Image (cartoon, rainbow, N blue to C red; front, side):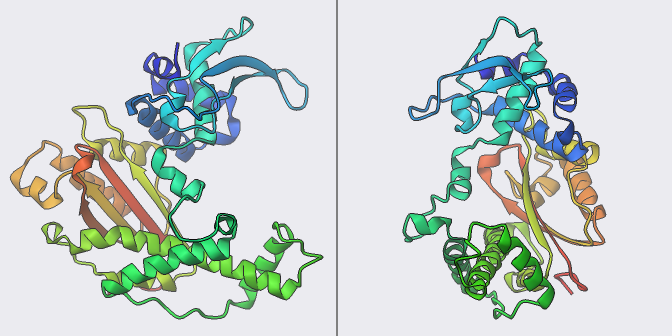
Length: 349
């Protein structure tokens, strides 16, 4: 039996029960929501063999716990590969394993979610972007994120946005970064602390600016697409650079055929509490067809689901803004990119 065949033999409801028992640290609702997304994504991926993967089989065994007290179910090697390949792995179950399919699926799901990829994610995790920098420099945050941020800044400026001038960090931030520095990869005893702190600060700064500018760059095509009639512009999005707190995430639906992506995400958000609770939020909602077209031409019976999803998103924060985007490759699925930030004022004033 392959991993794909195993997933097709169980439901997430059965797997969720065992995830909660086997991995107590992952019991929170939001973690389970991400596990459901991962489960549904894997079931919809097409298995594909990759020649340089770590193995073509996965051994399901009972492994002694780290502290020597009892045994736990283990799947090796399952993590570390492209997920399309992981689905092709033949599961070899040891004779002493008495677990059900749902228990084995929970174990494999944990391993793949712990460390695994789809092709697009290698850009972020393995830093394979074509940035015209030396191979080893890719792992220097100041160089890597500095280059990525600079590329984003050029795009943002071309579309009317302004990048704020780099300002000195506050004393509080310097103390926090100095504490992080002592536990970092820099040899604190050999390097001049002032130079090391400056380098570490630059890495932190550009990492943050990359995260914010990545979000803005994702929004630019939607803002320029007049079919979606968005009210926000790039200049207003640039207020995100002024916030001290910023966090962004992407949630994509993996609804079965015949089910709307909006209903799928609505269920996730309401049941698994997938959205953070911040005062300010900005969302990019991407659908397969322009939202206005769906709403007025009633192309789908899901219009109420889309409107309900909007209401839930806007009700999750003190004030929020929504940018509508279109990606025909999504079909009936929906993607949400959200950014949370702290500010006395909303982006659109």
